[in-house]
Length: 116
Length: 112
Picture 1 (spheres, each protein chain N blue to C red):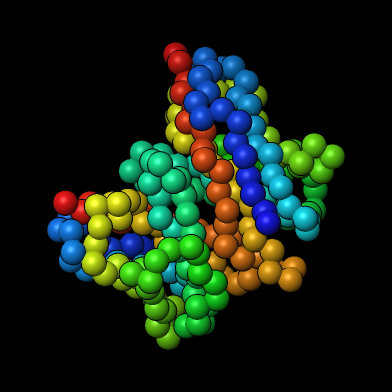
Picture 2: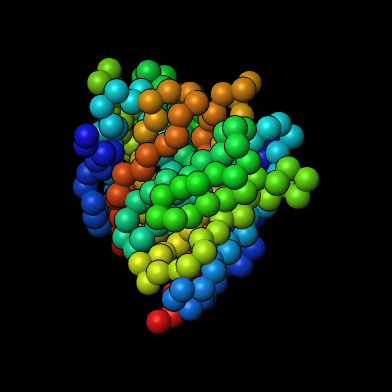
């Protein structure tokens, strides 16, 4: 079975500091991995996705993530935090249906706070 | 290009009632999935429809049901509402099997 674990339910950084949100996955087949962001009272917005092409994936708003098979990790980073990055971030893996993507399995989420 | 549209945005129902939520996917998208988001359980998969057929179903009781119409619009229904059904219900659409999911803004259901 596939699963996702996000380390740290809350992360606080200062504006301009590095953002690092951790995600580890479990999958017996090559995974499709995603990071989504959710602002208060909103739906989920896709930040980036990994679908077995490049291991370093660049997304929107300056975020990127690196797929590390040996560590079963897909951590999300941003070099310099901005106040507008304060939100909840979800890592997700897509259930594999014979090589095609199925529904998403989400981690518990990490709330990012950005201090001025 | 319009995004995924969910209606209504907010809903208050009484325990024991039933409710129907609606989701209009992005034009051209044939897959619609539903998720329930609660503070305690996080984001949990309810079901997915593809070309009017239920493709997969999560671990929810039979009170939760859904359907998809020929224009890809989808509805989900919850019967005999319980207090624990209070949640944000999110709909996501995809163009096909190996494409990313785009989410609507959700319907906030409160059961009193």
